[in-house]
Each structure stands twice: as structure tokens, then as C-alpha cells.
Image (cartoon, rainbow, N blue to C red; front, side, top):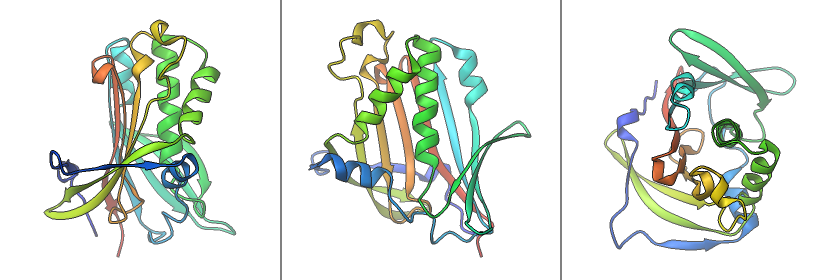
Length: 219
């Protein structure tokens, strides 16, 4: 069994060393929704992610939404990736996705952020979702860095997005107008995603982090 400690997933960026490189919109999307990221995961294994949420506008939802998200597989004519939310011994199915396409954790991430923003700040979830989806295909900067995974240094790539930059409704969004989405990826982390972070007002209003925790059941 391979285990990656949550405490070990600490990004290490050397000040003045890590450089941002421009990335075209189609390349941004291809990086974020990379195909084949589950191909090398044993179908009897389970990827476990930890979701930590803080929400100054609706603190009770942070308690509701903090827990583990497990990705397992169901074999058949086409393998499926199954997502399940786990909290205090209770399990809730989140959906199933074609495993051949890639890791659906990013879809879960941005959909939960859309829901949380609409629930907390108000506004149309359709409008919020469209702005977030648009950010996923816009040109961005990618930052090369390093992270320590259980004593081993691995290379990482981080993309930052600001869905509501310049939005005419910015001032009505109760702190979500400067929402930042930050996705850190690594070839050396099972499933590709090391962490997916959303922050509003630098985390003072809202913060959601979905981070790779461990790989269970692999030979």
C-alpha cells in the first residue's frame, strides 16, 4: 500500500525562483482536465481526498462539507470512477464517471465551489457556473514548483484562475468577487491532482481545499 501523508503534501516554492509561464486557454483546459490520469491506478485501489471548508458567511455549511471524498472503481463494459463523501462514519454517493476520461475530482471541485458561492453570497448558480467554466478555458499562468511527499521531493505545476476578475457584479458578491481557484498537479501523485483550492477574500470569507490524502488498497 502506498500512503501519502496529508501533512507531507506541503508545496515548497523558493522565493524568487519559481517562475510563472504563460499558458494558452486550450492548454490550460488540457492541463486541468488531463486524460488518462486514472489509467495507472489499480482498479482495486481507492484514492482518498480530504476536503476542508471554512465559510464566514455560512459557518454551518463548512461543518457540513468538511470530510473525505473517496474515488473507487467499478468494472464492467466500461470502467467507472465512483465518488463518495464520507463524514463521521456516514457515506453519501456523489456520482459515477467514465474512468477512461480522467480524474473527475476537478469536476466535483468546481461544482462544489459554484454551489457554495451561490448558497453563501446569493446570485444565479448558472451565472456563477458559466463564469467558472469560462475561466477553465482562458489563458493562464502556470507556476513550476516542488512539494515534499513523505520525504520525497516531487515536481509540481500550479494554475491560478480568477473567474470574476473585472466582473460588473464584483461588488455585489459579498467577498467572492476576487475568488481565486488554484490547482496544483504532479505526475508523481496518483490521480494527478495534489490540491484544488478556492479562496474568497484571501480565505477570510471562504476557503475550500480538496487535497490528495492517500492511496488505499494498491498492491
